[in-house]
Length: 317
Length: 317
Image (tube, rainbow over all chains, first blue to last red; front, side):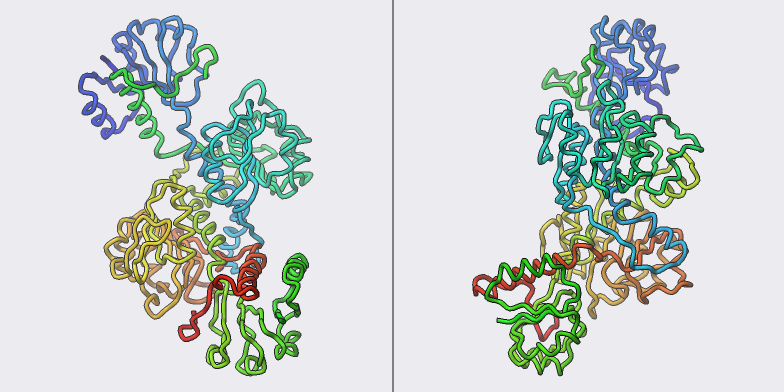
């Protein structure tokens, strides 16, 4: 059985752990798709970030049975050819949950504890104890989305004794939420939240989901945080929300256009904090992705148990 | 039974809750000690922040049986006279646990997620995704102190899947700690910690407890955070630690001298973050203090249960 990897710079520690553990498997660690291409036709299993597979490459991989995508994004995968050849695809869905949940809690604390003001005062050697801060503990947290990322934010929210509300397509109750609602009920719950944290994927139903009226319904002190997709809300609506002081603050990690242009209106808004789409970045990404691969490889090799994160090729996720 | 309060600006909501709940108790809400003084001789119970009682005032309060101090600091209490008159003293020990724990987690996230760098980039409209950040999850957290504040930090640390170590005088195991050690073992565990958070009171044993050798033993990337007392470590040792890069960062909320003078050497150190002794500040302080008072008053009135936070008058804490 042959595993071909197009993942660049796989740490030695991971390579040797894999070869030591799976002694009957041959591993080819290649530095990118150009180096991996000649070996595709012999590969049973292919490891990729999901951006390097063309229909031709899939067709050339005649023995291929499983593609492990070490990413959550699958937009560039040639699913038609993959399905025709009966290849299983798995990804690393959920891998961003920990760093993104830390991002969310970190940014809520940053806003509520006035970190920008305190850092500015520090620079000026200004000992001022009168900055008005508040606690995040005990607040009401509304998550847009109830998937792995939202659940991890909700879990940490519960540790801070927050009330956790979730909104999703189904409205089904998930772990760490006190209450969950279907998306149609959003208008009825949005006014209860101190914090609205969006971790929604981009689908037809979520594009420009949030309108002026949603921000008008929010509490005046509410913090809106978007770390899902930038097209959840238009820039115009965001500017309305902060300029009209419908909300206290917006923390934005994703945008309609990325990178955000240097002259973009959002940069200088006092009530906006911008981060450059980094909520999911983690030094633990590669080790975690390979841990997920190892779990699936164990299932694949032994035939025992179920593989994690099998993709529905018709839906593409 | 008469309660005299010298606490300024007690919110109406709290006043009416007390009078509604304890109908047999007469409450005198005075704006400070000057206003309260004439009523002291009739008081059974006196509410104070603990800074306004003189030996004379205690002596004049002939009926006084209980002093509730809505503060944790008791340095200015005339304990000799209080003891002579057989008065019980309670305080609000533990009230700072929640805001201080939020402060600690917030500052660790701020350092590890490079908030200062990101805020600077935002000001310059600089979309840079290459800032090297890390997660606080999974790290080893060493708390100096294992009291209410340290326990709350440890509790949140566990929510972030940290390994939590504690050092205290007794070394007794407390809630939310994986391991605890007596202070004599500090040298043996300090090198294991990614984060060292000090929440120790100032006693003879803790003044200048941390020496150069302790910081030399810490991990190079370690974050040292002091929110206990400023005299735990001398400014000289702190400057050695950051200038010699023995540690990654120091977060300081307390200092040998406060306020920190404008020309103090610590302000401009790159590896130091300074906050002006604000870790315990919370908008919830007064409500929480009165909740603790209410619990004790219920015990006092009914004779059922035990009062919280009774002070040992000989020790003064």
